[in-house]
Image 1 (spheres, rainbow, N blue to C red):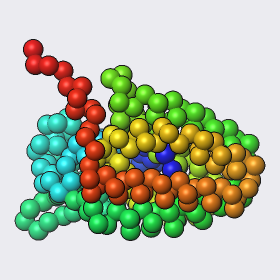
Image 2: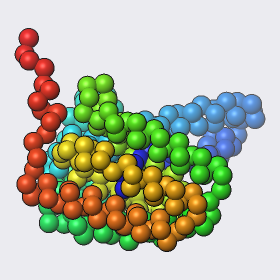
Image 3: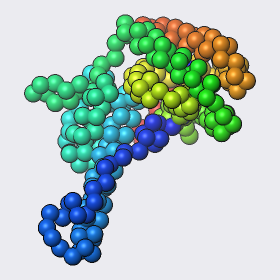
Length: 277
């Protein structure tokens, strides 16, 4: 669908295991000193986890937005300079992204952004839909008022952001974040974490195609009635209608993306480059 939310990174903080002071100190000292030592060690560990997670989030955003070009080699030193992160954090972030299928690890060559395949997009999109339908049914079945309110709020924000995509004051990244947020809230009531995890990886792959041209956002602006009908069906617990509308929207968007992957439209954003001073 075409609505979105904030990145999963915000909703899935890194949970580092907590190690108690008496396990870390390794020597027999006064309890108070051991506590201080373990507390400092714990803070350092939390800091390391936070830095690594920030590197993961920044690199992931670059891959999904295609600022880090598909198929390009990802140099640790370059990422360190561009993102102001340590080499260790960059390496750990890339390793996590390799596990998600956004990065490949090549022998003797390091890391590389996974290329985009024009012919493989339909297969990817249909795989994503196959998981989304049971997620949608489960969320509707387990819904409550708080979830409905969060969903409507996410739709309102994402639709407002969508209306401004292409203007100087709003970035494509903002729309993508809110679009993802809408989807995550939509499926959040599903109790099957394996399905959610699989969907998250497929969704990230699919979003990389959306960044290849801005015209998709303009196309999506013409479908507000589709979204309103879908949301009405969800809020009224008409699961079959919601599933039908979701599938129809999926087919429209996939057809548009496929057509433009084969015959790209000009990127309107390029026409707004500022003249050289």
